[in-house]
Length: 394
Image (cartoon, rainbow, N blue to C red):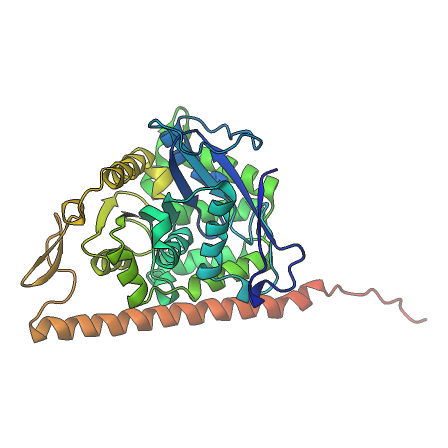
């Protein structure tokens, strides 16, 4: 099987025998190289709709086939992989061995392994955090940057606090079987409208449920080390001002693609990131949930191809972005009203109040999650206790 061995060049990798192994697959052939980075708890095959849409097949390349260095033509070669902590890749045991910087270096090591000097980088959710770190660390290796259902990390990883998200969080933490996990995953990743659509005689929910159960059963539930490590990567992620400046100054065209109904990565945070990356960023809002790459795969694939072609034609950022600046602040094309930075004091005060309440909401959700986790650990010893039958004395 194709693996890339990540060298142990830092203290974080100490204790990993033989280095961290990253499992990957390649699809298609051509001079256009695309690296797909999946998100939290996902494996390489979560990119199936994009692989099929961009290269026309889901049959992986023979691992013995060399990469198409310098090959002329309009073909596309895709590489996708399992992040550390999931699937067939290594699962380091320390949470400190999982950060978006470390995982971005995994992706760069994979590019080196493939002999890819540059590539179009696309990431989903946690994968978009990794992709943005990769672009900040090595902007000279990035031809374009696509960020799907992205978030700024930290408190921005917390969903909107309401009955639906609290219920999902509670059931996710209690899910112990593939069947329980599949039900929660479907409600978390897709819109109800999409799940209720009929495909023949069955609903899409029934079809996807069977696929999820089969997939989770074959690969197994994510290990605790991988789960906690990837949580750490999301929670500690942050793009600094200098990192944002490096991406902008490199002139990398960025497409931020987001589902309007995403309950995990909030749309407002994606819009805010687009503002920070002006003028190289363009935002594409689609009707869909967190897995908009599956729910609206045709539109997502069209947006990815648009980005690739724009980067190949060296389109100027000002002609790429759909953001504009006026006296009132940043405006999105077709978006009614300013996003931030209105100059009058009243609006600034309202934005400050909103920001405080938003952070308070996230803190409460985090505390709720911690309480749930602690309660589960407390219950475990008692679940293992069994009543002992004592013989009656006569």
